[in-house]
Each structure stands twice: as structure tokens, then as C-alpha cells.
Image (cartoon, rainbow, N blue to C red; front, side):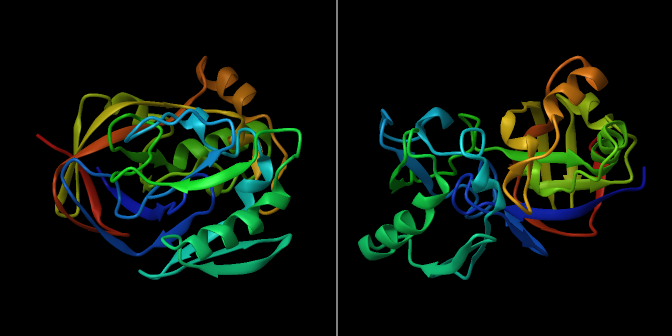
Length: 247
């Protein structure tokens, strides 16, 4: 087939920055290590124990400036950058680190909306799905949508985990229910990813630049882009690995 894994990303704090990786170890039933490990509950959140839906958290769909955050996790401290703020390095596990983060991110929010109140974690990744998912996207689909809009959409606005290369545009839509081998890992593709207004934002500036949802409706008749998968066989993966549909 000639498919390969082109890029790997994780998002240590849900909706608050992305981090590129060269390689990662996948674990059966889990999302990427440290992906959506924390989330930012807003001050109107109604949290239950464990996983909670995204409506309880601050996110790019409501606060576009969050989309311009980049992240780097070194195993002990998280460093966040944003074009309009000084870099912040902190330990999210300490009260002092949480307070520093909330003070740093608060100016990005519109005071008329529910604002960031606390960092939370659930012992599992705070993915948008109620199961621990890995999002898989197709570089050719992104290029096709960008050509339709007349702009380079970049990769960051989609908040993906894995980007595949060598596929036809929209071929990922036919993978629902199929299994993929990537490196030493195996994943089952479960469902499409429905998209929100966060994808309309230029991640270099944190400002809305293109109506990606309208473009998706024109191209596909829906607002899906990419697919969610679950890891069914543990193993390391690395950018450049071949990708195969499992027999």
C-alpha cells in the first residue's frame, strides 16, 4: 500500500498545546502516554468522578486563542508557549504549578465566558471519546480540503495524534471497523471524528481564519475529519513506520 506514519503528536493538557514526538510506546486500551493527561475545568463545570465530557472544560471551540499554545513535557515539568504570552514552565502536580498555569492562561479568555478554574485528571486520558482513543488523520485529506479552501491549513488545528501519508484523500473514512498495524502496535478503527469550531482557528495566531466546517460539509456532506481508533496490541511506533491494513 505504501502507507506510512508521518507525524506523532500528543496534547498533555487537553486543548492547551500540542507536542510533536519522534516515537512513542502504545499500550493496549490506552491513548498515547501523557495525551490529554490533564484538562482545565471551567468555573461552571459539573464534574463527576473519572472521565467527563468536553463541555466541562475550557477548549478551543469556545476560546480560539487556546489553539495557539504549544507544549513540551520533560517528565517533570510542562513548558507552554503562546505568541502573546511569556513562556511558562511549571509542575502541574503542585498547587503552586496549578496556580501559575491558571494565572498564565486566564488572559486568553473572554471574561464574559466561564473561565479556567482548576486542572483535573482522571487516571486516563481525557479524550473526547468515553474510551481512550488515538486519533488518526490523513495528510492527503488535509491537502484536499486546503485546496478546496485555497489555503494551507497546516496540521495543528486538527489536534491529531497520528498523521498518515501515502493514502488517497478521504481513504481513512473507509477504515471504520478495520484493524491497522503501525510499527509493532495494532489498532482498531472505531468511529469518525466529528469536528467543532476549534478547527477554524489559525494556530499561529489563535484567530479564526477559515470556515473548515462549511468546507467539510461541501466536500463530504458532514463535518467529520479523521477517525478514532483503540489500541488492541501494545508496541512501539516511530515516525516513518509502515502502516498496513491487518488481515
